[in-house]
Amino acid sequence: MTTRQAHGERLLKINGVELCAQTFGDPAAPALLLIGGAEASMDWWDDEFCERLAAGGRHVIRYDTRDTGRSTTFPPGEPPYGSEALLADAVGLLDELGIAAAHIVGVSMGGGIAQHLAVHHPGRVASLTLIATSPGGPGGPDQPDLPPMSAELAARFAEGGDETPDWSDREAVIAYYTDGERTFAGTIPVDEERMRRVVGRVWDRSPSLASAQNHWQLDGGEPVRARLGEIAAPTLVLHGTADPLFPYGHGEALAREIPGARLVPLEGMGHQMPPPELWDTAISEILSVSEARPAT
Image (cartoon, rainbow, N blue to C red):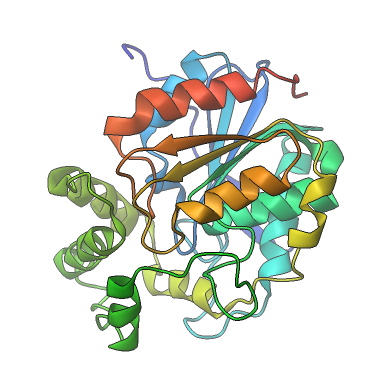
C-alpha cells in the first residue's frame, strides 16, 4: 500500500460505555467488522492487514472491546458485565455507525461473539468469517467430540502459567505477550521484532492494560452450538493446522455444523492472529466470502 486509508480513532458512546473505533477505506463500500479475541485491543488487527482488506473494496472497522485499548475500562478483577455485553457492543457499534449489516470477521473469543451475532442477529450479518475459534471451547466431558488442547499446553496451564507482569513496565509487558505468542503459536516462527512493535503499540494506547484480563472472568454466555445450523450467511472458517488450544477438529466441526461453510486450513498457524506469512490466503478468502452477499 502506498497510501494509508485509515481514518482517525473515534470514541463512541455505546451501551453506557465508550468504545474506540477506527475505519479504513471508503465508507460507501461494504462494511467489514473485525472482532478481536480475549484481552485484545484493535492493535492486534495489523494496519497492513486492514489496509489490504480496504484495498479489496471493503469499509473495514476495527475497535477496542470494552476493557481494552482506549475503550472504557473497569478495575482489574471487577468486570461489572457479562459476555452478553460484548455481543451487545458489537451490535451497538454497527448501530452507531449507521450500518444495517456487515461482513463479520471474528478471531478466538471474537469468533464466539461472531457466532452469537449470526444466531441472535442474523439480519446484521452479511457474511461470517471465523478464525481460530470453536463451536464449544476446549474439548472436555461436555464436548467429547471436540479434540482437547495439546498435552504441552494443558501442562502449562496446570503449572499455573506465567505470573502477570508489572503492567506499568513497558518492556516487561512486551516480554510477557511475546512469550504468550510463542506458547500459542504453531510451527511458523514468531517474528519477535513484529511482536515487539504490536505489543508496544498496545501498551502505548492502553491507559489500563491490566483491565484486559477481565475478559478471562467472563463466561461463554448461552451456548449456541445447537443453533449453528440456523446460520444462513455465507461462512468461512479459517483454522490453523497447528492450533494447540483449539486443534483443527474444532474448525472441522464449525464447517460441518454451519450450512455451506467453507473450511480453509492455515498451514502451520497456531492459536493466534494470522501471521503475515498467511495473509495472502486469509485476505483473499475473506474478500471472497464477503462478495457472496452485499453489506449495507
